[in-house]
Amino acid sequence: MQMFVMIDASTAARGFSIALTGLVIVFAVLILICTFIASLPRVLEIVARILPEVSEHHGLVPLETNSHDVSADEDEKAILAGIGFVLHAEFQKAGSRPGVASER
Amino acid sequence: MDIFFEFLKTTGFWSLTFGNIVMILIGIAFIMLAIRKDYEPLLLVPIGMGAIIGNIPVIQGMSLSVYDEAKWILEGNEIKYQSGSVLSYLYFGVRQGIYPPLIFLGIGAMTDFSTMLSNPKLILLGAAAQIGVFLTFFGALFLGFTFEESGAIGIIGGADGPTAIFLSAKLAPHLLGAIAIAAYSYMALVPVIQPPIMKLLTTRQERLIRMKPPRRVSQREKMIFPVVAFLISTLVAPGAIVLLGMLFFGNLLKESLVTERLANTARTALIDIVTILLGVTVGASTQASTFLQRESLLIFGLGALSFAVATAGGVLFAKFMNLFLTEKINPLVGAAGVSAVPDSARVVQMMGQQEDPHNFLLMHAMAPNVAGVIGSAIAAGVLWSVLAPAN
Picture 1: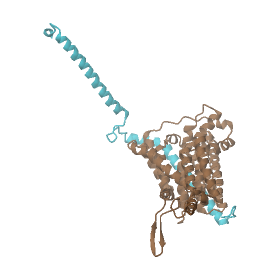
Picture 2 (picture 1 turned 180 degrees about the horizontal axis):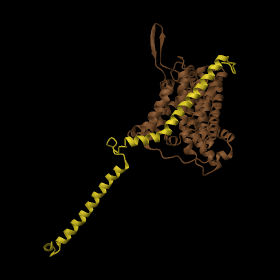
Picture 3 (picture 1 turned 180 degrees about the vertical axis):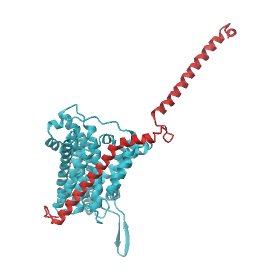
Picture 4 (picture 1 turned 30 degrees about the vertical axis):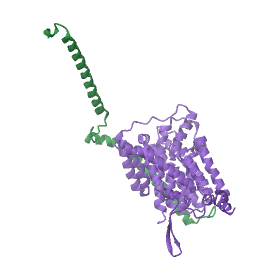
């Protein structure tokens, strides 16, 4: 290998064409990706009109609303259990007092 | 006494050359840069340690260096199998281009393409920065390198270590050590190389430009992007299948939301293991006898030129785009088109904040930064398909 070699015209031409073609291909691919990304929201909007998004996802229920429903159910059960316990305790107290049982 | 002298001949001191000492000092310098300056420590520490390991002279007849591969040898009338060194087995992943796609898998699983999806025109900056690759390729030809060698050297301008290793393993394996070291050195030196070029090519008014915050990107867009982008890029440039396939596969693992375990492994344990193996073996391949050559110096010179041209290409293209845009781009963002993720984006943020402490460019710079990763992989694919020795 020699430093600063005078390359022949055909090598220079081939090198230049490879460099130019390579750069054009890189630009072409990234322009295509850019165009696709720019149009994606509109495409998704049209698709959503035809095929509305399904909330079910392989039964894993990743949507926030569903997880919220589950936690709401749990809360309701806890509140009901609490109310039930208080009522039970109150009835027990009332039942132990003289004269109350007959009133019931 | 004879036994002592015999033993002395087997020590490293006996056959240590001046070149070995230089390379060991370079290895120590890499480790110091990583520790003291925090320049790419995850790469420079393994490479630096590897350079030290690779430059301890080995004993004749013992398989110790990365170049001691397994082979069949003829001894008298017998053909015997000679096993390779441990380092040569680890280096197999570099030689065959196995590690770079695995690193791309991890990068894909880490990368959030949201900013790019929210502002697609910034992708073009990632393409513009690839001018460094092709100009350096052309320049290398004029320095007397062959087409294959020039292609492998040019990709240093992509500022992507794994891509540079992948392409040089395919096109010019004998230059792999020098190219890998040059690529990673310049990636580590991004905070030093880029700022003067960025400052030189922009005015203060341009550096003060504030950009609109990116829009919110839906999960559906993020899921569709890796599949379609892979199809587009590899149908045009099939040479990029391996690198881009793994990059977009990793990203799909992340964005699909149903393979979190796989994505997590790819972006943590897997990429860390591969980085360790790649770093230390590439470092160990820089033995003084193969590395301290005139070619290596030329490669370092061309690598620096490549980085500078790539940075300038991105900045100038951003200025060119501003001629047509109503919502102007801060031209500093163009410098992030070189794919040194996320260092070049950090440099953009730092440069922007030097002029205006309330200007946050990091998110915007990540768009050309990740586009640069795609761009450099496509450039590598194109060069590989055009210049592969079979052609």
